[in-house]
Length: 194
Image (cartoon, rainbow, N blue to C red):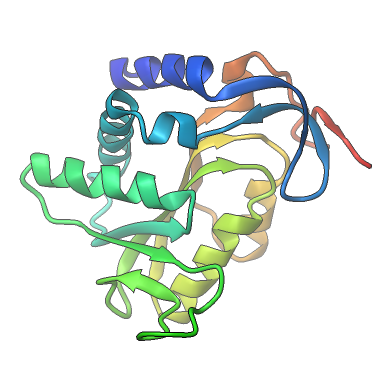
């Protein structure tokens, strides 16, 4: 783990990780929650996220980084700023969960060009369904998915979902185990179905 990753993990543990009973977007109830936005829009963490994403993607020969709104927006912004600070260009984009009914009515915002090599990012991935929407939109735009990269993986089936879509290039910076939560990757961990 790099120095930037170690410090980012500390910030996520202090600002974003909570124990208790929380209803997830899936409808499940979890004994912990990671509110990534509490860290992602904090100055030091935003800088570290950009640097970590840059380090993880700089050798991939991609031209764009993005993902599904809202989780991917701060990550995308941090990444493209870091690319600029390192003297490199990078296009950012995000995918709308639904096409807006006004203006240009685009599903993908930003300057993504059809057929680009891209990285899909997400903040906290549980089963991967949100990131999969961004993957599908990028594939519909004839893009090549070089990597799907999450900040935190809750280890509840995302890798398998991406593999079912033919995406075998999934990584996470951290897993829920880095927060002291044991997870059995074969079954949903720490989730109480209701």
